[in-house]
Image 1 (tube, rainbow, N blue to C red):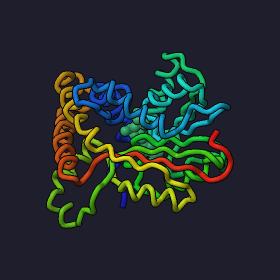
Image 2: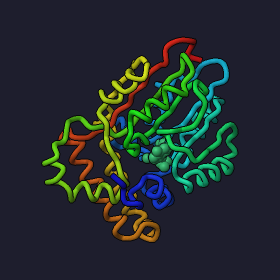
Image 3: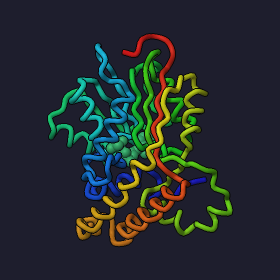
Image 4: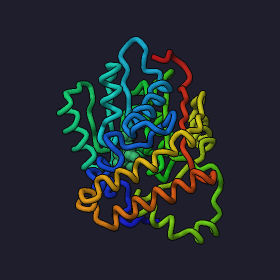
Amino acid sequence: MTVKESYDPASHYDRVMAAWQLLLGDELHYGVFDDGDEPLDVATRALTERMVAAADLQTSGHLRVLDVGCGSGAPARTIAGRFGVEVVGITTSAVGVETARRRTAEAGVDGVTFEQRDGTANGFDDASFDRVWVMESAHLMRDKDALVSECARVLRPGGRLVLCDLVRWREIAFREVRERRDDFAVLREAFGDAHFESLDGFGALARGHGLVVDRGDDLTAATLPTFDRWRANADAHHDAVVELIGTAGRDAFVRSCDILEAFWRDGTFGYGLVSATRPGGSTS
Ligand SMILES: C[S@@+](CC[C@H](N)C(=O)[O-])C[C@H]1O[C@@H](n2cnc3c(N)ncnc32)[C@H](O)[C@@H]1O
């Protein structure tokens, strides 16, 4: 099935990149909240910290990290700046590559490069990375098997895959999709063409490609306050967001927060993190 061009993740991210900065912040992902009162940027950094811990970046020796779906490059800059690792960030969005390169140059962070490539066919050599970091981009790739296959292929023996994303906690029958088609249309309008995998499904895909899964965290409750913060940003930056993505785009974003929050609460969708190691070799 072809996807309407504006819903295709590459064109979608070309279109929303600047507005997302106002709505989501510098890090284009959910936040993990301890007590629910923290500002959004503290919570988004906390999710990055979860990924850092799972990735095991504090090893001796030079690590090469592939960041699949790098957004504006904020997580890549964080890990390169803190751990001195080399990061190659990839995204299908041309605007994303340009934005990530510009912000990284402005921040003066070394060791980070960005390229326009697809995570489901990345084109890198086999066994050429020590870590593969997939932060909230998997839902934008229909072919999850191809994504995980590519991640496993480019990992060196002993290397680690870390992935966090929106997840599906239950099967959704076609009848339910049909009954709720207006809600799903709003979600597609706001976030582009997206397909959620289950946490177990990600684990099974990793095992299927020869990786040993060691973590599967349910972050649904911890990410729930994100929707309140996003709605608050949509209010605080109302005029600027309308200027960038129009009234319909802003309204779809706010309505999407309501729809997703209800899905989070009723156990349909949520958030998860998985990590896995490619057997053989050492971890660094
Ligand atoms: C929600 S953003 C996450 C950005 C970043 N990982 C972060 O956490 O700040 C999703 C990213 O995935 C990228 N993306 C979507 N489909 C992709 C694909 N097939 N291959 C690579 N990147 C993709 C988008 O362009 C965007 O940069």
